[in-house]
Length: 437
Image 1 (tube, one colour):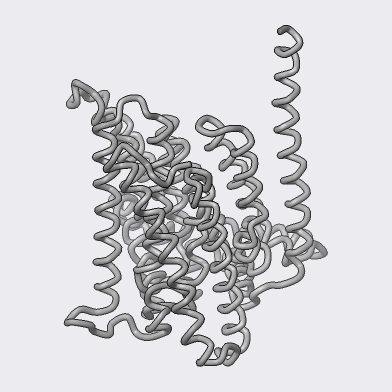
Image 2 (cartoon, rainbow, N blue to C red):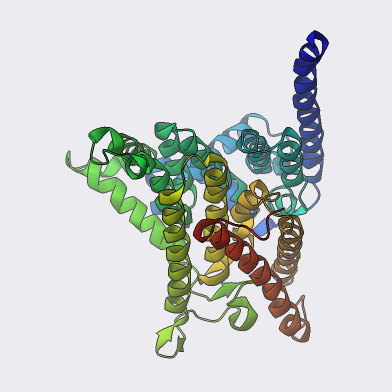
């Protein structure tokens, strides 16, 4: 018995050591791959914005330069440009892809951290490695050079911290995600739901103590968003009240710039709109409503069903902390998936945050690993398709292939979404899961 007890710490340390060594080897492999393939259109924008921030300053940046990004990631680009200026010999492709590769490394670690309390160490380790070596994450971060993983990392961290009752830090990372990419705002209700859990489950619901988590998150988000925007509006201060109105104005202006830049139903995306309305104006009407409105209605309906089902489960649960944690991650997976599939103006790469959360629930059901593989494969095909189209000025893929390829790929996405959605409803609205292994 004493020998068994003595062996346990060594076994545990070996697992952590194995995971660390494999992730380190994978990270070095990503560094090597970073020099091989890049979409120079976006990559040139990152470098140009970094230089402009150093030359023009933060407060003059938006006025002198075209940019459809929120302020959050611009700080990273400024730091990267400063490093590049100080060390011009360092390979620029490795340097500017470093934030995305580091974020994927961080996401893999967080996946392990998220699963360790609710699954076996083996499942936590496999899931962590599956994401880090997933061609989907590699195609986005290491090859393309995009920053969707930089956005996904604080989203995942915020959810994990909220579930662990670290509400100030949860609000901090939620605000950080929003200031990088504004579409993360769709997850604020989920973060809020986690915060009001004490209210929902308390016999004395109207106690001020039950509202403290929500207040912490709200105040943290406001403070963080304000601090991030201040350097960009510093020269416009004309009154004390501008410290409150200025950040709101800038955020609205940047949100509009990001969302109104591409008024198309689908931008090289294998989603619902890409199947028949690729690069068509999302103002086109169907049954009296625009494509944009239809997309919003479909997403809003699905979001409402997901959120209401989660509410119902929370009221009927007792101490099913494991199920509750899994369902939170599954709800986020579905919300981000639905946003990608049905809302107009989506880019091909925007599904990556959903794939991150799908990794966390991958072993929740026997069928999920197969669906995960399908979704990851379609995502990689979508990235390759988009890269070919963009680098050949839309002459790379023949129309006759597109007409078959895109609807087929969308159907694969849709099948995966529907199965995960029905599984979610089966967990929340019933007490028995016929899909669960």
